Image (cartoon, rainbow, N blue to C red; front, side, top):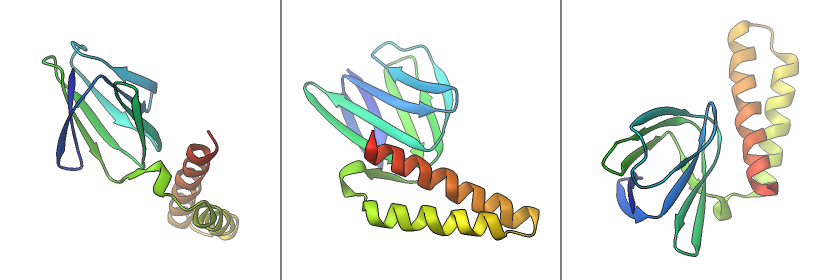
Length: 126
């Protein structure tokens, strides 16, 4: 079993798959100690035949050699609680902001919004 800390809850699970900045990373019992940056995407928590998927916007995963993992996410929302209409609206809004941005700061903020909403959209369709 892998013990993960997520949203101030400790769970004993068989495996967790996280969206690391270097690609999808599976964490199993006895995993080598690792620190991974999370990118916007889907984190899958596997417990027996049950799989719960969460959308995480960013954060870090700290995997310890004793089969404990701390998932520190800025946001973690069960995928089945995401409203597709709001995702589409947010993607359209941030895309428009990106095209009309005049400063580097406005461009960076709009690009982050586009990236997160694109990842949310992928989570809903994938």
